[in-house]
Length: 269
Length: 130
Image (cartoon, rainbow over all chains, first blue to last red; front, side, top):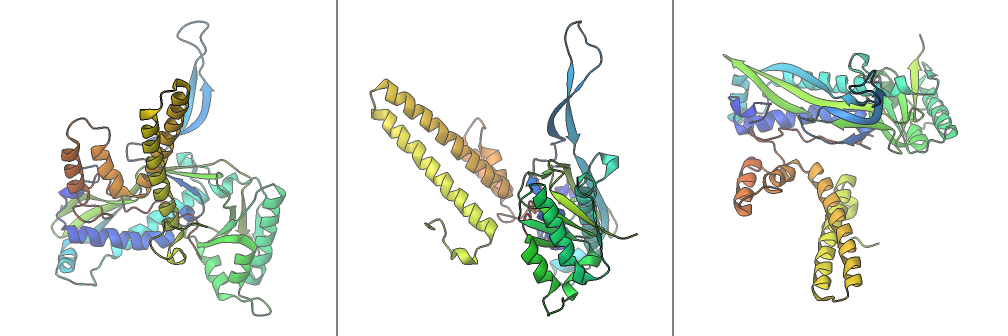
């Protein structure tokens, strides 16, 4: 048994399969950052820090004449989101019910995906994570209220990246508001805004819950580094009567190696 | 372009499956090369030639190991079984049976309640999207 304590849970193998499958179905569309950045791992729950290849000088020395330097590392963060599932609902699933109420799991999956996206794409200072937009060396582009203008914004962002020597293809993360507007819009002449964006970017367009505005990123690789310790997993905490307390959990670090490889597109005001 | 590594029509396979197939083929080729050098070394009397072959075989060891690590990272159930077998002293077959039983109790890609990792196996989604 590992730290997830799954074998301690009063849950059948079939019900575990159901929970895992439901979690995966909810998470996969929402994990926008992973669709745009380099992914390394998973390296395991015991993996605690990413090597930065840098050192800090340490004041003083145990022996005169000996320099001391200390390695700098980026610690992984742990994201954990607890939720409660009814044991009766899982027993119903074991009986063949196909409409078991797993809403609390769905909501937790959406929350943890948003947390991952936000940490990677916008940063999370309290944990020392500098996100893609925070790190960008380019000035942000202000988004128009008119979605017909988005291809122009994307073309401008691509031009800024090219001018900085950053090749493509390019991906686009769209916050939920932008995404809805883009897929609903056509330009003059009947071209879908979405299709026009694809032609400009050459890479994926991603629905990105947790993102405010939009982000154009280079997909050339080597610029945005997501290091997974424990990949997203469902664990068991405890149970009490009909309530099963479970959680979604992962550990990861994120760092930007190429701050010139992304442009933020921000809402005005 | 040779596409012998594909068992199914390549156009119908997702990109990650094609990458996986390429690395599987590469792994096979590296293993074959290790075997070929082993045979050549067994019969080659010239010490200078043998030194070159030993060096070349070392390259193949490296390539094989890198291919294997890539594939294990992409296949949690395979990785778990490998962790139970590789670099373990004792009976190889016994370790293999135990590792297989633990890892595959609920199917090759499904984490079991006692699964060492318990991961959903999502991993990289790079390039996915519309």
